[in-house]
Image 1 (cartoon, rainbow, N blue to C red):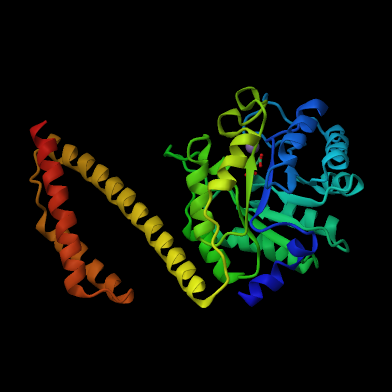
Image 2 (spheres, rainbow, N blue to C red):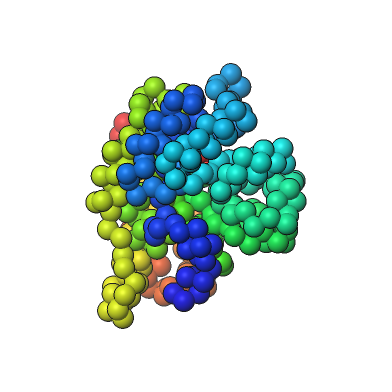
Length: 360
Ligand code: PEP
Ligand code: MN
């Protein structure tokens, strides 16, 4: 706990609240839009205004940001509301312009974190400054790439760092736009316990209705802050319309979120317990998803066997699987008896599924 406070020093120095709330539109669209949102956020828990000025879009032809002009609108929003400013930088020129316009915190986007050359270019452009930088996770679920980006900034002597968890893209579409894979930021936090960890629920969700739940999970996992895309007219936003929420909704969310205190020993105990339980819930959820996925593959195998007139039960293959799983289980301190029970249950369910396929 002590350490964590020390390492969050730059947040405290900037007088940023805990949890830190960063809010604002996906993209700066017009001066009026930026100012209107900033004024609406002034009376919420948000202390930092976000807006994308240069937008990395997956496909060409979409709105790609207003460019440097938008930095002036942000400066005006800061003058009028006192909110601090943050924007995404994706090359050395962006860094230069953001520094010239006194942007308080820079963030590195998910598509940039995947590229060591660009991360290095940005880190070099910032060398010698004490600008806070938040590094989003890479688009793919690769902890090393994320850690590597953090290390590149530390090596360039940029020490006021934090990370943003915005989820990981998958080919298969799930309920999320980007899968949270909570285990990855948890592992990152274990490696760098002092690095402030911020959740971006908007890009994980891709929709409005699960933003609250994602934020609560993050706070239960001891995250240090939230970055939420916010717009006065979300449906008509020029980018990421489906996931933005109105400032008044953000306000309601932050009031309802349970923020865990760190006061007495007893509270610390309960916090630790709640954190561990949330981790268990996350893993249980993953277990169910992975079992479902296994079963769908098993269904496909059932159809293949049926079409080729092959028996469901393949004893040799099954014994091989069991042998391998028992050995792997040993490495994880799981008893042979437990592995046998779990895999027999999985196998039985597979057979039941394949029998259904044979009937169909
Ligand atoms: C954004 O924050 O609007 C953005 C482009 O995010 P990401 O890099 O996470 O896709
Ligand atoms: Mn966005």
